[in-house]
Structures are given as structure tokens and as C-alpha cells.
Image (tube, rainbow, N blue to C red; front, top):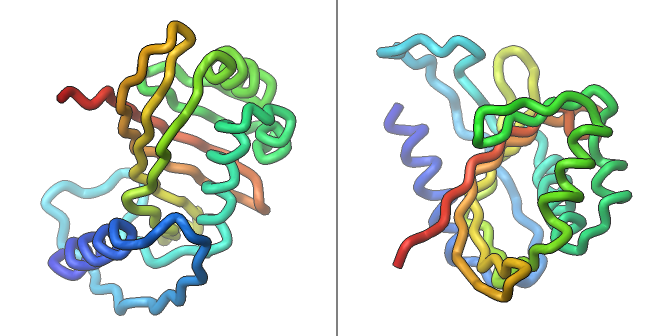
Length: 173
């Protein structure tokens, strides 16, 4: 467990120290020890480093949303995708997800977007996920600005988003 926490700390530290320039990163896989869990995971456990190509897909998905290129966003989502929203609702299928995205993002502007950490992982079940901790200044249609932080998890299959889980919060000063 200490190795997992150390790995997350190192990843977050590297992400915090990077500039906005596009960089190539080498990834070294750390040995994974089996964990004796206090609470047994119900989905999967013993994650390893996943496919780094999925990191770029998650970043590209954010970019097309901020650019309001909803057609490009739709192209990145599988027809049968699931979206678990922070309010507890679940959207099923590309059409419902894209309709929600268009309604939610059309009037918003994202400024000063930053990723604190982004980790590709693969579980024992073979599912490829990318976990993202990010933030931005969100400008609402009435011109007000508020800092928002998110934790997003994307599951990818064949270069498409098949499952997305998102949580966000407004940062209070």
C-alpha cells in the first residue's frame, strides 16, 4: 500500500511541476505487490500502469469539450457508453450523453485549465481507465467566474470512451 501512495505522490508532484508545453514522458512500471485489503474491492484490485495512449485520449476529450466541438466529442464516445454523473444519475448511450454535454457546456467558458495528476491504470479484469484530477476557472453565462475542481475517470475500449464517472466541486476561497 505504501508503494501505491508513494506512486500517486510522485505522479502528482511531477504533474504539478510541469509547464503547459507538450512533453513526452517515459513511463516505468513499478512492481505491484498484492494488497491485503481492509475492505475488499467489489470491482477489481491490484491495478497496474495502463496504456499511456489513453491519457492523450482523455486530454483530447477535455479539449474538444472546452472548444465546444460536440461532434468530435461524440466521435470519441462509444454508442453504448455509460456516464455516472455526480448527482447520482446515469446516462446510457452516446445520444443521451452528447445531449447532456451540449446542454451543460454550451454557455460555459473554461479558463486556466490545469491537470494536477492523470494516471492510466488497468485492472486485473483488463479494463483500461484514466483517472484525472483537474481544475479550471469556469465562466458562467452571466459572466461570473468560479474555480472548480474535478475528479474524472474514463474507461476506454478500442480508442473510445465506454464509461465515464465525474465529480466536481466549486473551490471556496
